[in-house]
Length: 265
Image 1 (cartoon, one colour):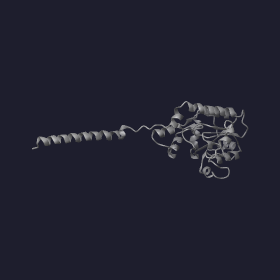
Image 2 (image 1 turned 30 degrees about the horizontal axis):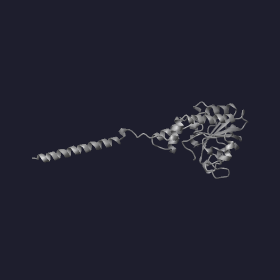
Image 3 (image 1 turned 180 degrees about the horizontal axis):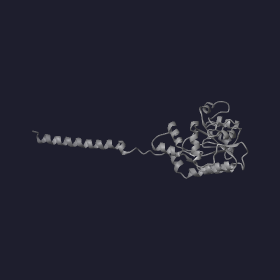
Image 4 (image 1 turned 135 degrees about the vertical axis):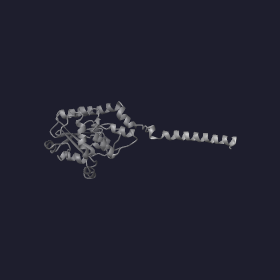
């Protein structure tokens, strides 16, 4: 038979053990999936792009200036070269989704996003493209999206009702050849080869039909370059760009849009 002292000791031990178990249970419950995933804070860059009033103001301002610099009527063969991402199509939804999940860029997730064909338009770009086409101009969309994704890019653009046809617009993504050309004469960034091909009438548009291909087979004159990165300007790299020498061209034949989310910098 247990003494009163032993019964008291056992009782205290049981209580302490129960208390420890309860604390452990509470602690483990908080870290289980049932408690929900941890909320990830968006970077200031993504918040700026998606929520600020400054971003659409600046983007629209740049495009208004670009419209003012357009010729009244394009000469045959004149073309505006534009980047796609953060220049025509706004991919901030992709950035927001990735950051919200605590994830960064990956080539697979990016390709999956492009295939969704859900990117919106950059503020101001629709009016600019309307003016280019209205004035008998042509647009070459030289993008560093993989060329295999060009059809998705084209579908995404057409879904926004832009006045684009295979005759007035050329979509050309990047291939291994573009990257391998860097370092050769006149090739300092991975869009230079395609710019040269455009001026030579050798550009390989992904969106052209047999009939429309002939409109791009002739040499073209690049009269304006629009992008969100300094390397959207021919013959320039982030490291070699001479801002002092480029500035006289900015607002005339070079237009750079804000993009705080990513870049060659």
